[in-house]
Length: 209
Image (cartoon, rainbow, N blue to C red; front, top):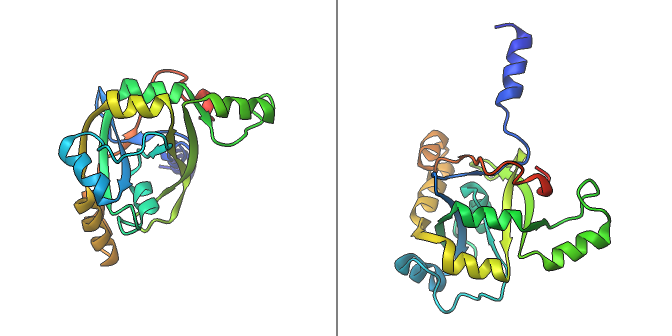
């Protein structure tokens, strides 16, 4: 293979900058959240959030396991000691994306700041793209989706979209232990398989992807 071909192959193989990468099936997608044991343990046990879960607050879900690890510090941060893998319907997930607004103003997508702020106030979901993380939780040169749910989206998430809730705190701690020992290949074997999510055509166009 020529040097030119090698470079071309590298470009083709490089991850797209703004795409959803997640563990998913034909019908579901898995997102991650981290809570205190008081919320996380009963949620995993019962397959739904307990009464103490606050529906009035915006809840952020993350399709990227490693971004969740970055956010919760490998399940060590106060109030984030229990990591949940929440399997939800693709139909619900795509509803949220279709009705979402970017959390920041983008002059290529919004007419002006006023139009963006009005959309942000009325949207039941919002999206931000943050640098994906590697096993050492260092930023990578492409971005991971964070999806914030509020109002109607929160209600639908809790009452309609959830298929299963699994406590994956043990996996988080096992991966972290291997990373600390420098056993990155072994740690990588424990990670959930996350592939690019192919949603409906144009699903992410209004969100900068």
